[in-house]
Image (cartoon, rainbow, N blue to C red):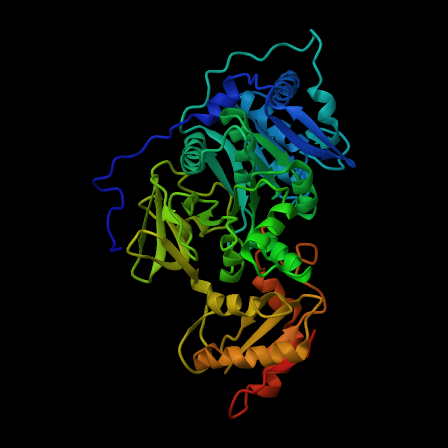
Length: 533
């Protein structure tokens, strides 16, 4: 698409539903649908009416302690029902929920940074504005007459801030974005138009609730009338088998792991049998699977879609919410779907994707490093993504990688790394990988191993793979990590994306050994050098 005014001659679609104000102002009386979550070793079920009433009770108690309209209340916690209750209670007060990723800040620093009226955190003793989140359930019981009813609240205007979310960006330094009510309404409305969640659906939420999109599905349940279940990533399969979801909200790593688990158990060759195996593993009622956040491999997409268990990939940013999404009405495997009606896109002269929103999240970061706003938010109000891609003739968006995924070897053309990493992830024994090679004569892959990794087999398969690649794309050294990349060891972020800088730093010694020994060779080594880190 050429440069130009992305909004010229376009009618701005309005959100179909005012979800935020329905949550804030309406009392849910739905006794049919429920939320399920784990408390200790048991799975607890509340009706949506009970969930909503508990949130009202909590809101009354928060108001009695001084929380008012537009006040900010922080939540610093892993997934638990208290997170959901606090978020809903803050909306009923007309306040602003501030989601904070655990491990990023000390609680007192969060209060200072975001100007919080109160912060709920795990393992905290109640003091000043910091309160132990374990106390929340007791605050959702019916209050006595000494706790006043909630005062009248006219609702959120479209431009009002209802959430603050963090985004790490490429630097890893948390930035804060104040999120408008209309942007949330717009995104949820468009998702509902595409997928029609309703009676009979049960959405399994397992990604961290400090990501705003994960809280949408509780909003959706209360407004559109369907079941919802809350889990953590580690308990996803166990929870799915217990609650039989129709929709799972996941990231590529979840589906890669499910595929590997099924194949290790003796993957059925027959597609109907594969479909039955996938369904049985996930509770037997899957209507579709959702993925985003990072690119899914074609092998994993084909594994589920060929078996008629739809795995729909999409694309979005914290700064934009959902931009494009495959769905039952428009699906092209390998793409991230067609662009949603409330978004417009173009590519600048360098081929970088630029996005405009008719109902923007915001037009700036409120908390960031100097220069961050100018790098991302253009004077036009558009977002510069630093992602590379194209749109095909049918309007499907394809993402090829990021600008900083392009490396410049010491000789030969530039190389885009994600397509090579995707091919390597499909090899036997490879759980995850990151490829490096800036200013050297060949590429080196750092591999996160599966338990079945056989070095000889991996070496042979890379030799065969290299034959299909251009010379500058070929991998001539492999460093095999001693343990898998994970969130716990700091090599994946909480969306299970590679933390490239941390991986490179962790394996700096091994990379130097490879470069020192082989970078001066007349020709890169064949077969590839294997180093065990």
